[in-house]
Structures are given as structure tokens and as C-alpha cells.
Length: 504
Image (tube, rainbow, N blue to C red; front, side, top):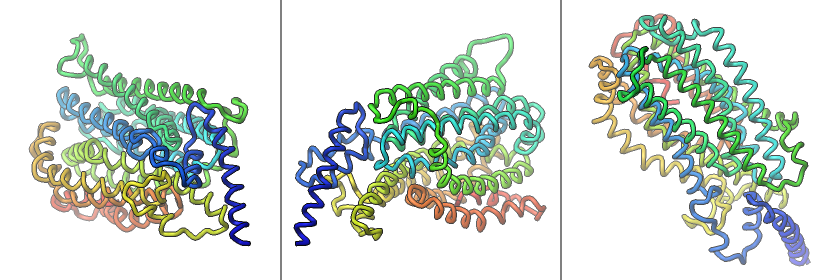
């Protein structure tokens, strides 16, 4: 009797799912939720039909490919900018880091609601129309908040320069800071579109943003900044580079918005288009609840980081320049695979989490089995539902394979000559090399931690907050206090202190 009831329940479930699938197949862009739900119940589907194309945007491999392209282009450009600025005046290489520190402040905004997209928008069981509305709400909120932050930065440019630029180039850097203030608006818009569309299985949107921005940047920088630049009456300055960067950031944001509109208009949504496009308070609340945890985590982490940087700048121009070059190596080269893998794993952990919750509600049990967590035993499964943890575990393995040889190469051969080339100073090159040799192992651990943290980020943001706060308070905070209150710091200790925050 129980078998008969169970079979009837399964058959009725299949009937409902088939009706949903028939509607989804009419759309020009198929919703991931419909695809994955079908795979869970149609056991007789052939392996060829079950597996999507390997490089499709809604597969791990395809999403990782697009994410690598999206992250590597700006990383290469940031490195190229420092090379061009060093040719103009190597003393102003440190000035370009003001843009980085402004971006760090903006990260508090960018890592709030946008990072909640992996959990909320990434839930592929939610109707597609509602997910698109969440994207629109997120983009509008970020644009308004980014504009407000830009105006605040513009009004306090001199104070920002005093905090993060060495005294010998501070006066000449205020103009650069003023121009870079509007990076808050462009960065907030860029981040909102990128993270939201990744959660919709459209990693090509962030790639389009990056491609348009970097292409415009390279063309204009080549014309006005490079050693092959057009000769004009006035020689280029760092302000020239800042103006070009801001203009190209705007181009990238506009390209991303237009491309997203083009994609969304191709969707056949059940609801009225006007209601889908208009931001809704309910959508904002849905993002704000988990976003509050990620925003608080980012605020604590970046506040401690900026406090530490202020102490490093006070050590002098050599240390400030060395730290800027160290960041160029770190974010411009080493962190590209880590960020691409993290974005990919967060997206698919969010998908798997939403699918598991739907299955758990259907069977009336919130207890996850080992198969729910790890997925099928086969390394490459014929099913699209692969387990909640599996995307993060796969990213961890790939990160280790890449980062171990990369960190060793920089430690033994690459860091010192690269720093010497950018700064033109043996002292700066020596400090930078010491920084990297001291903590190269930390980046191996950091790459692993970042991938595993995607599990918490896309499922339980509150625990993600707790983990990050504990690490930052116990590790970064003591060094920030040491630099701030005037505990005697020798040259050897300074080399160590400039590296401590990286572990988190």
C-alpha cells in the first residue's frame, strides 16, 4: 500500500515537472532550475541528453572559462598601467594605489548585497521572472549608493590623500584622488551586474563588461600614456591615466547594462515586463537579509586592512611603494585563478543549495545525506545535480594545482626583478621580495580557504561572517594596533607587519 501511494506521489510529481518543463522550453534562454529538476526525476534520460555541452555557460567548465577571462583582463591592465606610470615618473607609482584604496572602501558596498546574489538570485528553483527583478533591484540600489559614495569621496579628497599617499607626493596626488572618486559609482554598478548575472548562469555578461572596458583602456592608454604615445604640448601625468580609467569604467558599465537588457528582453517571462523591470521593496528585503551579514563582514575586514595600510604609509615612501607593487603581483597575477574559481564555485554551490532545499521540502526532511553534500561517487557525473560541496571541492583542488608552483616561482625568481623594474629602486625591490618570501605559503592557504568559504557564502552567510571576523580580529587587529599606537617597529619587523593581513 505504501509503495502504491509512493508511486502515485512520484508520478504526480513527474507530471507537474513535465508541465513546468514544457513552459521553460518555450523560452529562448532556458532556466537552470528547470533543467536540473528534470534531471533529478527523469532517470531514464540518456547520458548524452543529461549532460549539457561541456563549455556551456550553465556548466562549471564553461562558467570557469568565462570567469577567468573576466578576471585576467583587468589584472593584466593594472600591471600594464604601473609600467606606463613608472616610465612617466616612478615616484608616482604609489599614487596609483590611491585608486586601490578607494576601491577597498567601496568593497564594503560591493560585498554586501551583491554577494548575497549567490544565495538569493543563484537559487535556480525561484521563478526566472523574480530572479530578473532581483537583478534590476540590485543594480538600481548599487548605482544610487555608489553615486552617494562618489560625492563623499570627492568632498574629502584631501583627507583620503593624507591617509593613503606618502607625504612627498601627497600634494600632487589630490587631483588623482578627486578623479578616482567616481570609481565608487562605476565599481558599484559593475559589481552588481557581474555578480547578479553570474548567479543567472550568464558569466558572459561580466566578460563583456571587462572586455569593453579594458579594450578602451588599452587603446587610450597606448595613445596617451605608453612609450609610443602621441606627442602633445603637455606631457601626460597620473591624472591623465585616472581620467582615462574613469571614462573607460563608464564605458564598461554602459556596455554591461545594455547587454543585460538585450538578454533579458529575449526571455519570455510569465509576468508583465514592467513589473519585472521595476525595482521592488520585497526584492530589496530578500537581498538585504543575507546581504547584511556579507556587508558587515566586509566592513570589519576592510576597516582593519585600511587601518593597517595607514600605518604602512607612515613607515615611508619605500614601504608604501613596495606594498603597492606587492599588491600588483598579488591581485594582478596570483589572485586571478583564485577569484575566478571562487566566483564559479559560489555560483554552483548556490544552485545546488536551492535544489537541495526544494528536495528537502518535498520529502519533509531537512537532514542532508552524504550524497546530497558530496554528490555521486563518479568524478564526472552524468547528472547536473552534483552535490552541494562538490563545486567548492573541485575549485580547491584546481587552486592548489595552480598556486603552489606559481607562488614558488615568484618567491625564487620573479618578485625582485619585477619590483625593481616598476620602482627603479633596489631598496623597494628588496622590501617587496622580502614580503613575498615571508608569506608565499599564506597564499596557498588563502586560495584553499577562499574556495571552501564559498560553501558558507552561498548557503549560510551568517557563518561566513563569523569565520571572517574571528580571523581578522585575532590576526590583523593586533598588528594594526602595533603600528598605530607607536610600538617601536624595526626595519625587520616592518617587513613582517606589512604582510600580516594577507592570511585572512
